[in-house]
Length: 152
Image (cartoon, rainbow, N blue to C red; front, side, top):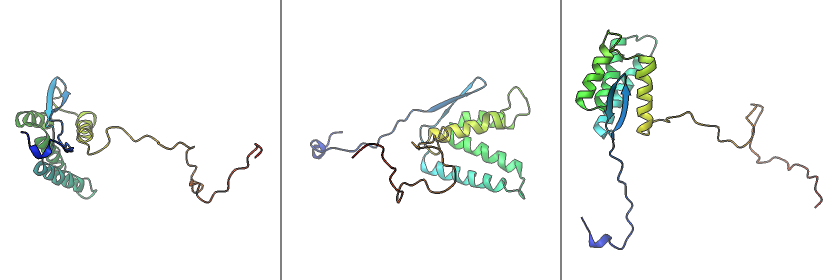
């Protein structure tokens, strides 16, 4: 669609990639949605908040926590793939079941990074100087200049 009013002005383009975010689990390929629509994000935040409450020592409701994890995949995956993921999450068959620590949590972390919701890699130390020894400020403000060995 061409608009004569925009032919001579620069337009900032906020279009985004609409490619799915594929990942594999033991031979099954899943295709996470390209974006998380706002209502789906609200559902994810609720599920994550509920899971956070479950991690409190007095809670211990593992069934609700597992359901919260499954709900995250209900949001991120197409319906048929979310169903398959639920089957893996709820399976007692070691050939089909998904491992919480080695597969499920790394998948969630990977996808959150792919959606820009958390870093995909740990932050690197961007400091150009030596590591802080904890003995005080590392700011050069107010520091005395070092003596120069070269003549002025």
